[in-house]
Image (cartoon, rainbow, N blue to C red; front, top):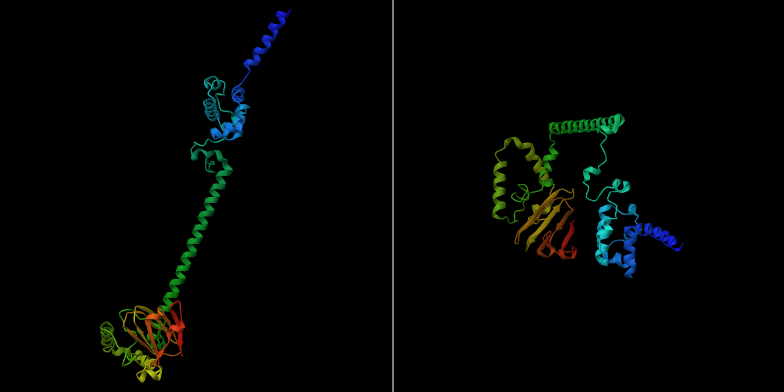
Length: 318
């Protein structure tokens, strides 16, 4: 009787021993060595949840079979136990859930959303895609037509401006409104004071301009307008004393505008260069470097440093 009971118990214990899974074997090995789960996770540098899922044989919580096998080998190596018996008990195929999740090494083109133009999109998808293409093409054509119309309107405006006759007043204000170039004289013929010194380049440019203007008999209307502009200059210019005289002791940028806001002088003065300006007052003056500029107003010295801020002076000649 006792022998029969012992045989029955042996048969009942045999399936239990055989039913030990890989996760249970790993847990027994870890607890047998008194290694906490958190310490093992920190050593392997993996989340505690992954180790817990491996010991619980929760394959759905693991990314894939390759990860489970690699983690098992790392645990066995750390615990110094044979890995092959446990690896033989691991699942050999991907689960349905893990197959649905894209792998980190999967090409991007395989994860892309199918295009609406593919046959699998169906007739409705293809119609929507074709409608979208037509709408985009129509918008592009409308924008191109609008651009063409704008260009035609600008061309018509340019032609009308070019066909309009020039008024005499525009020629009279030419010398006061146009900004002088670096190789041209600062003033029109007849506006340069008699005592204003000129360097060789400015003298040559003034002589060349005078030679170019003199032989033109057709420009009588412009000559009369220039004479009228010169007549409007203050009486101080006729007396030989300019309204404003700038003398540079170093390189400095200067700008002078008249009462109408027209540009009279704008250039970079070299050391020793002198510029005189006489136009309708008040004159607005800007000096880029006040400490290297000497200023005279109506022949009297002017303290330009008192008007300077951060070495830039701005003042008016009234």
